[in-house]
Amino acid sequence: MGTRQSGKAVGGRVRAGVLVTGAAVALLGAVVPAPAVGAAPVKGPALVVGATPAAGSASAAAGSASAAAGAGSAPVGRATYDLGELAFEPGAPYRGRSELAAVVHYPQGPGAKGMARGRHPLIVMQHGYWHTCADRAAQKRLTAAQKALADAEKAGNAAEEARQLEIIGKMSDRLWAWPCRPGTAPLPSGSGYDYLARDLARQGFVVVSMGANGINATSGGQAESVYRARAGLINEHLELWRKLDAGKGPLKGRIKDPATGRASDASFTGRVDLGRVGTLGHSMGGGGVMEHAADGRRGDWPAGVKVKAAMGLAPTATWENEPITRVPLAVLWGTCDQVNTGEFVKWNKGRNTAPLHGITLTGGNHNYANTQWSPRGGQVGGADDAVPGTRPGRCVAQDGTQKQHRGLDEATQRKITQGYTVAFFRRHLLGDTSAQALLTGRAKLPRVPDVTRVEYVAPR
Image 1 (cartoon, helix red, strand yellow):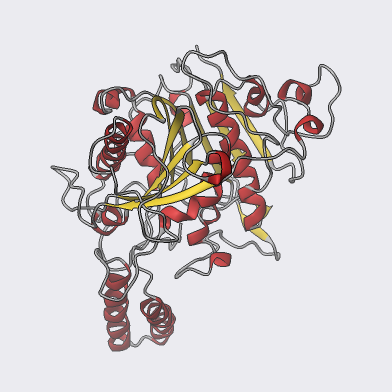
Image 2 (cartoon, rainbow, N blue to C red; image 1 turned 30 degrees about the vertical axis):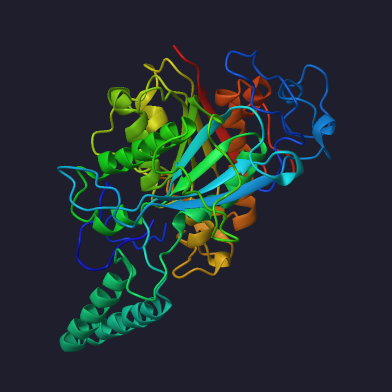
């Protein structure tokens, strides 16, 4: 999650004054097509949660690793759509417009052509608060001005401070513009979860990762309404897919193959199960997902849409923090994440009629959930946002202890995130009971450090 440095307030209850700029274990070795509506719960293939387990052990409850290892996976297609940079207007009291654009991953059919047969659950994703334009020149000048400002402050040079602050404001405005300046590409935060979307599509899900740059550019000073705007954007995309599944609406003929720019050969009509929808959000996108899943917001969902699972990656607290008691909920965050402010498991414990899963990664940070926000991605502004410890490789915990934890690297954090994300949606959208042991903490992911703690709250 980024902090805009132009004097405008950041939407949401995040730490002011902190500049914070924001998984390859195959959980399943084989892919089971999404079962038809009303089919029996999936009990296999087994989740890969460790070496060959002893009978009756927790790992056995999650399935045999050796049974799944080495099996194939379904080919995954990628498509995009863009209905305009200002096509979505959240409505009063929110002021501003946003894009209606997304990246789509889907299971391909035989011969890697078109959609796989059957009806597939839909998962929609929303990214968080980050700058909107990939303006490398502006980022370079901003970084230089921030350093010069610090030097001027030390020297007590008020005139130079004022000059550098003016540069910082101008460069920040370029990075947070919407639409972006001519010749400057939008920063594709929605593509930063492609690693998750590919894994989920291999399981039989259609995965839509929406852009929210327009909301990011206009949310300053609108903390009271930004999460409703984000929830509204989710509903807008769900409505688009409801119409497309029926063979009509704005998306018909508008989904493109990004490799050619021509219409995708995948037909989604009659292939998307709006009765099995999952939502996933990161940072303020996680706050948007929590707002959308709240008990009092269910009436806003498009007709026929049933959200069966909602997951937040370090979700920020929403303005009202409304109860979420009726939808299976998972929250995953890292102890070195400066941004996580949403204690949704704690807030809903004791009144939940659906399962709650709290997943904590010791040494995880905020930005690594999104490849576009991370250093190795090479994107403008990518950074490790964790507070560094006194020893190399350590980060300061943000859980109130101030302990120094060994920081996770990008690949490891994403492997763990992938594992739990896939398990969560398989459990609650496909009825895969083999995922339960992992999601309740009775089993561990294999081939990753043992840094994960799971809190499971059964429905009351």
